[in-house]
Length: 247
Ligand code: ADP
Image 1 (cartoon, rainbow, N blue to C red):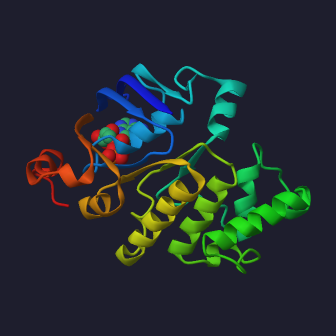
Image 2 (image 1 turned 30 degrees about the horizontal axis):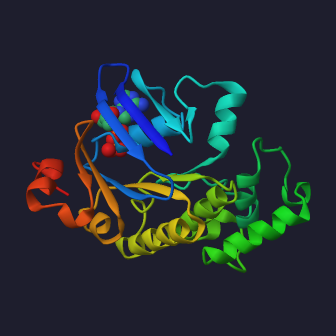
């Protein structure tokens, strides 16, 4: 499903974010990508959906090259990759339902209310998805009146409404109260289990990766330093990922 080969990302100014990353992630996997801040997790996820262009190497998703893709081709590939951001990226003044419906769109029309633009079937699907993520009944509220945890659920609903084959989440719980972190992981896990969507979520908390990941990929200084099941993530392996950094 996701094929990464010889990936290298050097940002202008010379920061090396990823180096020689090779990965294969199969359809239906649930992967926890862990590493300290600055390890390259976000850069890797953004190379996978084409938000960041690698310096060398490349990524394929579902047999389609993302790297180098442009215009309509990139748009079509991205339509099948849901992305959940740490800061939610909701349109604050729109309703919860409207934010969710954006998952059905490729271009956002400049209308005060978007709801009237959508087929009834999409609206019904959006309401059902909001209910599924625990936001039933909140569709007509303004997005910025919700708590952080609820806003992240709107973002997850929006991504689900894309009907993605892959869901990428970039530290989706980092802006939330620690008590909410496991509820976000549980939601991602149920999406993976029930819909068969491949999920890759980055994390900087080892315990969450141990508790929820079925495959853990550890990044340190832009390189993969662990790739295996959480049970085999020994103290020595954890130290390779996190040594010298306060968690
Ligand atoms: P993580 O998600 O693990 O915190 P990132 O991929 O965000 O890691 O960052 C990896 C490295 O790349 C860091 O040193 C970071 O400062 C740098 N970096 C990330 N994005 C940019 C950018 N847009 N411009 C320059 N450097 C960047």
